[in-house]
View (cartoon, rainbow, N blue to C red):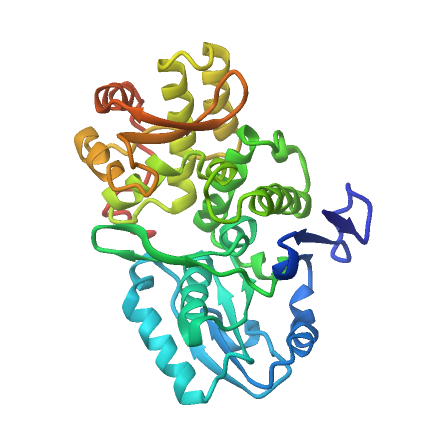
Length: 362
């Protein structure tokens, strides 16, 4: 459910949105708009917390004040900092500060920070409240909402995690003012894939409404299937290949860029399986291109390596598994042969504009 303090077309600094993730006693609100970070003391007070640990990947002037005695722990966004060692370090800092399960943890950073801090909160004292203040477009439209927390292993991405819903999410658009271009594209990849899972044509909306529509879509899916046993698989549209591309490029390719390419591939694979026609296949590429995102594979990645990495995907319990478009909409398709996947990948164009390992901007 979404409520608004302004008209849907508004994009002024005073506009805001509130989206409820309906999970009975674990329901919470996602606040979206300029300045909503200022709501944090009110949220913390409502939880009854007496202390807070604020884990931040942002400078002091961008770090929120929880309104109670707090410990500020500096973190670093990035996939290379998203591991079990980081979770252990955070939990030890919680102990040193005397944090109890009646207190609160606050994350302030991008998607890798919300993932890592969320998992630490889920494990500490078998579950401590967490409030997310996502500061990147990717984190605001996806990573901070839904309760999935995870870190990486050398063998794969997000292989160790837990479901732990936040107490609230504060998507403050002021944090996006200084976002680098690559990080904009990172978030746009998640927005683009929404076109094929229930929220089309978001590129025609103001940014505030793009974020609100993406969060509303995810909130509805999570409320229907919190633990990924059915409809929540739809949120993985484009992610199976996207995760493999991240690994194959040593994370030189950002998550959203990988999802964008994965979305184009999902259209091609659905076409190869006869699930959709040529026009719908082409629509996958056209939508992704409208956001200025890559639509072809990076030049340096090999098809066999991608297939091998996709075997490690968490959904791949019976052959290769993808969320694909079809005559009745998107759905989970299991047991797709490696030959079909490999042949479809081999037919993908190579995009010389996708980042290489040696890209100096990384």
